[in-house]
Image 1: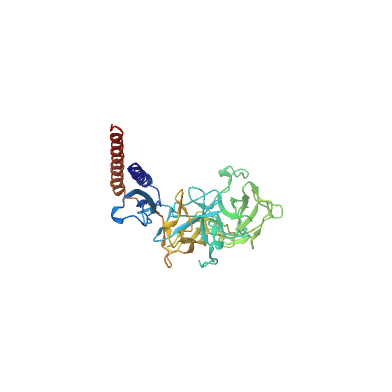
Image 2 (image 1 turned 135 degrees about the horizontal axis):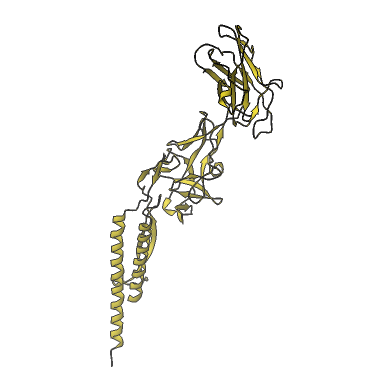
Amino acid sequence: MSFYTSLSGLKASQTDMSVISHNIANSATNGFKKSKATFSDVMASSLSTDPTKQVGSGTVVQQNRQNFKEGNYNSTASALDLAISGDGFFAVNNGGNLSYTRNGAFQVDTNGMVTDAQGSNLQVYPVDQNGNVTATGTDGLIGLKLPETSGAPVATGKVTLDVNLSSSATVPKGPFNRTNATTYNNSTTTTIYDAAGNAQSVVNYYVRDEMPEGSTTTSWSVYSFVGEQPLRVGGTSPQTMTFDASGTMTSPTEAVAFDAFLPKGQATQQSFTLDYAGSTEISSVFSVDGRSQDGVAPGTLSGVSVDKYGLITASFSNGDTQALGKVAVANFNNPEGLRQDGNSYWSATGQSGKVKLGEANTSSNGAVMSSTLEGSNVDITEELVGLIAAQRNFQANAKALDTASQISQTIFNIRA
């Protein structure tokens, strides 16, 4: 009988060392929660057994109890590194099933989905433009996706350009050639947008014209290009700007309406007007005194922020902001009853109770911390001391087993 008693002690000590070794191995795992093996004694008895003469039959593993004490919090540079300060778990879609984790090291995949290292998508509640949750419960969850752009593109229809062309400029020599800077006096570059929101560059070249001797007016030829395409008015290029003796522009008297052209990479033609209304010709150097255009490009994603309530907000290069969702925080009546699935995942069981989903920093749910990761809650010193104790227990049970073996051998050697 003592053989089996000592054997149960050996198995218990081995289990204890396995649990402690698992804790130590995951001391650097984000969101890991340590466990502790607990044991109970085994007693063999019946109604007729004298309680003062009962002898124990060894030990058995009672449970491998998880400890959900918070780990240390470490600051990072990524806004999508999240931690929960308090109770709760992040919910992720793991192959179509909900899993729960305290490891908030999230990243963006090639499709713009926010996922963890295993590719599971972070689950959030949908919100309106003010950040108010619009659906709740398990069925209300959606995967968090970061949009690439914000706002609808608008093709440029009007450009305003106020320039001063120097009255002391000389007439260039030779015919105009945009690749030869000696054949024009000055140039301007203006960014416009096509119907898809793509930027296009309009380059205007200003060439002072030869005027009859004694003329009180001056004129300038303006050659305009979008990329490699020359812009024309009624099929004609260049356009002409004229000024009187005081430097006031006398023509064109209204905005120049260019013929339609096909922007590079687009299938739809575009046209726009160019208004020189504020342009002058005085003796100072060439300058651009004003420039504007009415096209709009969609804003590109420039940043993401997450507040303590789990509200995720994206900001864009055009100044737009967009609320994308609220982090869903999962909680359980008995977290110690959760099943460990590996990869820092837990799943619900009958012992944990059904999942209770809610918003962060409300009721019993902890607050979300951005640019922060929760480390393991393993105390290396405590675990090493426990490992030594488990090893000593193993050695003691092995010694008891050896002693029982020696006693048996002595009995076998008794001769009549």
